[in-house]
Image (cartoon, rainbow, N blue to C red):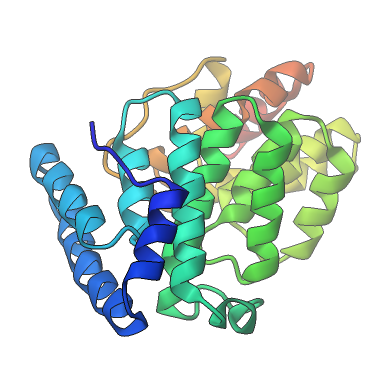
Length: 267
């Protein structure tokens, strides 16, 4: 367990230290985090996170990475991640608005975006659905290019809550996205709407990842990969999609049999 600073502690630090020292401390803390990301030993990682947060309470990556690897319930992570966002916004200072619309293209914005993404997931997992979606939408406004793939999470949220109109608009915003996350969701919507192109859309989805129909047919959550990576067209990608979208597929009568039959016809 690591004791993280509160927003009050962040404020005290900000007022007690010169702007130059704030920057130097944050750079040093970030070096600890670079080492933490590259290490597979959990004890070492936790020590590096402690060092980072001790060096600079503004090191948002220390909060967010801890929450990513922690087994704590999601509701206990929310306060830490809100402090991380606050700390990251202080670190960005007046440049925050200048970067809007081009976030992620600037390295200094990335701790803010990483913390916001982890916060959105913690909110969703703790049942705070609408705040989770609000954070996700804000991230897409800050960075429409969406290097983090937040659009895929937001699509999952919309589908889970049957917010079909919002989902359709999101899919239209990224017509060139051919990853399985969007392709299978497009296929499900086409099936629901009895689209004449539904089978063709299904085949395009299957081409993007052939593992998903088989996993959907099991009608249960799958054991997640521990690699931390998602391979295009790979089993880890399939597991990620199914674990986030199995419920809407099950709720849609006949949809799983339909996608499985389409996959068999392509063998």
